[in-house]
Length: 308
Image 1 (spheres, rainbow, N blue to C red):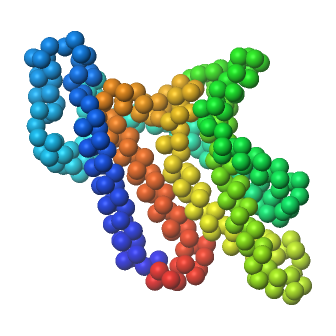
Image 2: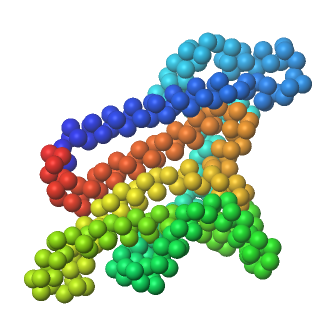
Image 3: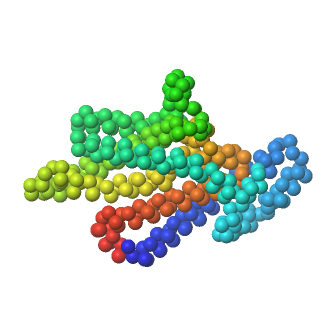
């Protein structure tokens, strides 16, 4: 992996991050007046003007934008309009709850989706293949909030086994993790099946079998390593996007993570908090893509050689 390639990737990542921050700033600033949102419509003009002056909202948009970029460059993410606490501390306080949901979700999705897709490709046009693809279609088509509501109705309302919201004990993770993992596992299953089916139909496999290599050995040594390359890409993208996809699930289960906090902050026009969460999600996605690119070179020497 040449240093120039790594530098170019980092440069593109920084440009992407800047575009994301700029878009978020403009969209939030033009969407509503935080003074009205925080103080309420019954506040008088004098109080509204004092609030805008205290937070610099009475300045021209271009000046607010430059000040915002300057603060971000100095790792100052601003203060919450609602509590006057540092936004980064408020977000970091809720991050462990989100991570405790994301990590088992990602692991469960990979553990279920990838083997299911590989098995479906090996057993193409059989009952196993059709069952796996039916699971994949349902998992992808049914929205997360509907899966969550159905689980709450079944296991909380009807059976009374699980708490429907918040963190009570270890069982609190069961329904949110299944809700999020169902869609991600469906994506992995479809992707793994397509990737594996392409490799199994490749002349390389026919050559290996013609040379007397047993089927299982050919699959293990030739098919799986080649099929793993695009699957690694998907794993990186899914893990990177779990914070964003967890927004709906955290709200359904009243989970005290940053997804639910983001919705509350957008509704309150708490710009510093929203910007911090968006920046965190963006950095996570960019890092995930960067790790995937590096993993490409490790898995496939041809990719590594082409980047020298």
